Length: 368
View 1 (cartoon, rainbow, N blue to C red):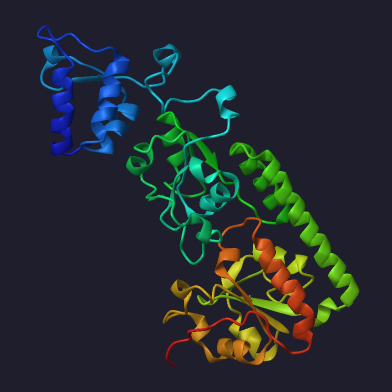
View 2 (view 1 turned 30 degrees about the vertical axis):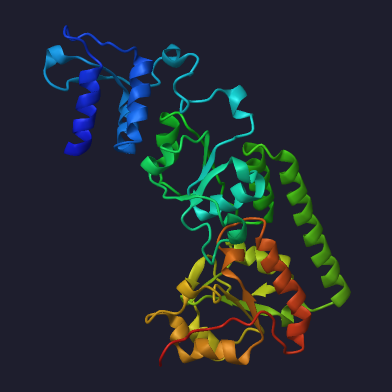
């Protein structure tokens, strides 16, 4: 539903679109074009109303504001050429073209857009594009930011919307029904997945060559780590790592963090699968060799009043063990930049054996 103010604008448009006999003056395309033009002066909600509900005519003979609606994309020949409707659904041939007006709806999608899309073709990024946990936050400076609401996205008239979670669960279907192509960021649980998603995103953004270069770089960095491990001849049994966060959570198998530890040649101290609270009871009688501290560089992620990181046993881990700090921007999304975290873990392994630290986290532990 639209509110009374927006309704008045819609009524006025309808009145101007009919003659004294109640017949429609404007063809459907012209009517929608006028609807779209008016949105710049009242509300993007009207454009969404026209796109999704499908207003085709206003018939005054059936009473005031009796809108005859039908699905916009029910018949393909209604917008055969699409000349006056830039937000129509694109065909398969057009889908392969390099997008020129790209919007990103969340910070995970921001990273791929910033990596693969030329700056002049980026209409807007998400509101978190410059946040601490955004890996390419420096590249995001100076680019317009937008909220992930339908109104804010559609009024910019994009030819492609990129998202992982932005806009909600039904966003992709919603925008596609409005005629805007959507590129969804896939889930990555390990580095094979990361390479697969990187290839898919690069192709969808018209940057296949850049994507293959980035995948080759991931392979090269992983190979260098394996060579380093071979040269160091370090025993994995002596390098059990406990991953912890300011919220007091850790993770076992089935997560990208676990795969990062494995690629770095380390053994995860957390033996139970999935995301869990810190095993405080186990830490009383059994200790890891190294601490991997994630997100402690993010001021928004510091330990809260109910976090198990405030427990003395948890604090002792940071005080008494070699600590490898993992930046939140490396971990926030399952993407190619997780390699930065793998390298921090792998190349600090030899140093930690000598009881030194790397990337020490600044921990705000609060009052006792």
